[in-house]
Image (cartoon, rainbow, N blue to C red; front, top):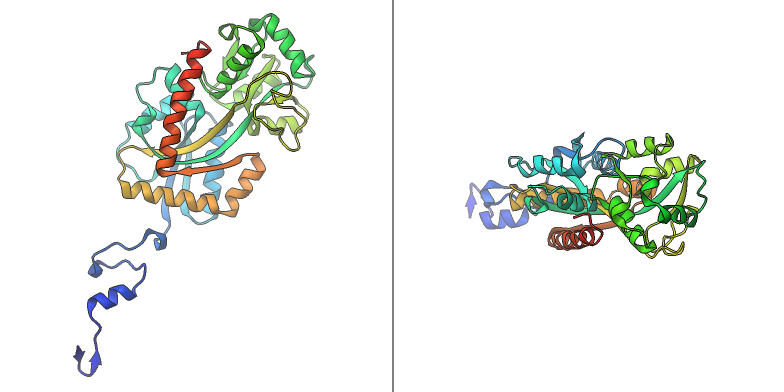
Length: 330
């Protein structure tokens, strides 16, 4: 077809040549791979500042903005009840494709122990981000120089030696219960002091109010490096490079457990909105900023999205429920 001596290509040819372009005339919105970055995103950390969810949220904020995946990211805290207060807010939130909540194994257990009306069936799984070893610590001036020193005194009277950790029913309390069971103590007699944020647990340790603490390594690492806390053991199958502490198994306590963290969105978002959030988090995961955050915090890269993450989340719900029932916490 020609108009005034100029050849005009058919519309179909024009659209085919506009690779990844967005064109109403072509009848489609184009590929999200070439779309503009999100203008803003909010990330809820469902705990007090200073804990693992808070630090993960803030590292994600830096990586999302630094990699220009999202122009403006806000992190805010909703503490309480092992994250289930934040979970309830997200579950009842109107459709919002600019909101994520950081969560993990701690929340899986808290849903069970707190008998939360809102569950992880009420959210949209976006991505699993990291896994991390737990660490058992004591104050630097503690009489317990090794894990065996602590276990000997603890086994004799579990209630006499309070242990600080995260929210009730979370990874820290699960680990304390499993340790008690492994050394022949009654898990129900463990004097576990639950805190909603890592900062409070750390203060109780440094203030001499508890005998020991259990948490993710990143939450205590600075104080261990500064010589204010002594690491007695880590919870995974292998020692942590640069940390002078054996695994629980090597120290004679037959337990292995690692924590993990990820992000979820409101359940009410559309499939397209879910995919856009997954795409943004995937781009963040590939960024140099996020890789630096993994190294700095000692987190293991454990990335999982979509259906695979949903399947993993459901299996973790079953596993945590079984463990909590076994050690008398549910």
